[in-house]
Image (cartoon, rainbow, N blue to C red; front, side, top):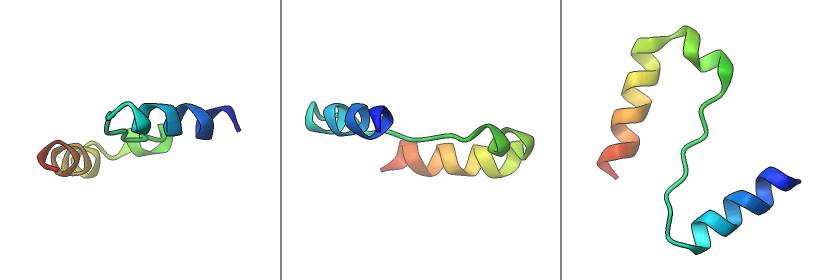
Length: 41
């Protein structure tokens, strides 16, 4: 519940938020693509 509230607050302040799960760290190529796509938006 706290994560959702913090996400909402950051969004209201104009921040873009990307959530990276620990399991995604096992696949650096896929994570790199995800990060690149996020940064392009």
